[in-house]
Length: 416
Image (tube, rainbow, N blue to C red; front, side):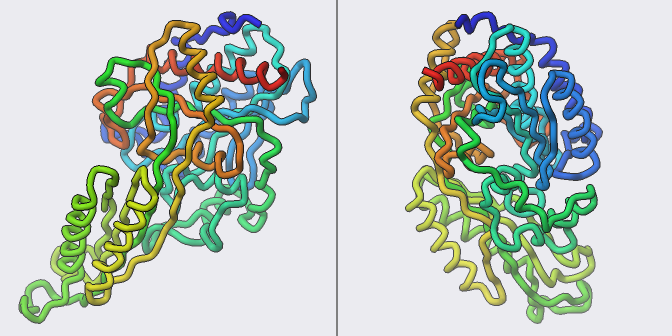
């Protein structure tokens, strides 16, 4: 077996990334391709065609996950696969490469493997997951649906008043939310899962290193805080007689931020989403909804800070907090980390091991005891989830090359 016969075409990968970025372009304000919006649906159709051109068998499941399968030419076609992939959706006014790099790099890796003439002893799959970013409710929807990990009633919930839920958007594209159970697959169908992603932080770029081998993903909790007040005329209601929901929410925001800061560097927290009702300049706010994101490498730290935040919210009149979702931190598989490292060493590619502070679909697979690995490449300035998100094309090609080599290495190792 000569892995070096597998050669990525950087120009082809670059063109795929540029073509995909056209879907959801927001007039200089980044990419808005939130899950199952019109831009997302168009991008999905485009990517289906790219997978078919590569010779993959393509289908879409009841959760709108896209699956492209490359059958083994020397082993059983219905045997367990090694899967790779990521997501196609973005945050509102996000970047061109979060998620997109993973699916385009996976596609290019599978192309290069096919073109090399190597006959792999097991099938490969390319997975494009639905709503990783959580624009509807909880995030990593598609990968969690695949293993029956959805919360009860989750598909009928939305992040805010007036926002569509996943059940509604699935119906809009002709799917039956009642058949979501058809998505579920057995962990025995997978030998392993690998995901390529931009780092979304500054570490690799600051070190001048093109490849990050992810050791694990942090614990994550997302919560919805609602604060009620009383609407009233902005000009005729005296200040001392007001019950302004936004003023109360502002007190919660600053106190929560102080609680997170006092907990030390092992935890970060963000209230990055705020909805004020009725949201009119001359009306006193009667209700505020805000979303809180907590992340920590230590589960106990996250639990302790969450407890303090609950106390802060409950100490405010007419304020309540509910959990959107919690996701336990996971460690990547040591064998896959070693395989990625060997792939780097064989081609003389520098690498660095690090943890991920962002959540990914790769978090789901370890919960099912499926060996999982992640490969990071640098992003310029560490910027992500914003229009300034950028990468170097040569780093993208390096990530795709390491992925392809690792897929081949793992496929043959599984047969030994």
